[in-house]
Amino acid sequence: MRKSEFGGFILRIVLGVIFIVHGLAKLQEGITAVADRFASYNLPFPEVFAYGVTGLEIIGGIFIVIGFSIRLFAFLFILLMAGAIATVKFAVGFLQGYELDLALMAMATYLLFASNRFLALDNFIVEGKEKRNKVR
Image (cartoon, rainbow, N blue to C red; front, side):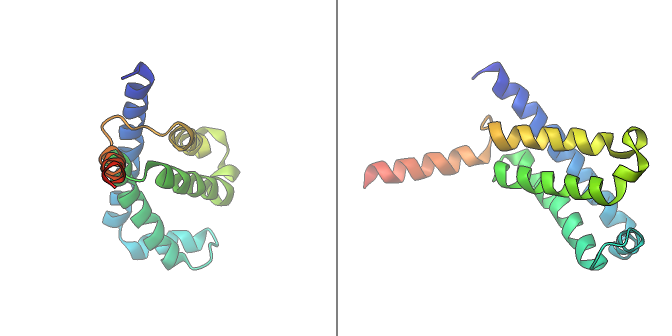
């Protein structure tokens, strides 16, 4: 194991936990309240976005933490943060605006390109496929 793998693992856990907590906060706030907030941002289909964003944050966060489909969810988180910056946060400015979103986007970008297989569920899936292919 290289040091960068352990660093990537820490980054993966922190990113996943942040998204899980944000998703759970939306769930606790109530999907209707989240949809109303999204409507105030003039987003189309705010109720669909409320369910989608909440679900992505919770499920994607869990999958990132356990290391399942890391690159897929990293890509989806990049899109989510880019959308949040473009529609809401950019107008507020960097400080108290989109600095956290930009940091989360950078973390997700690292996982997209570097991935991280240290203590990841994806390892068992890949290893299982490789073993099955060797048997054939």
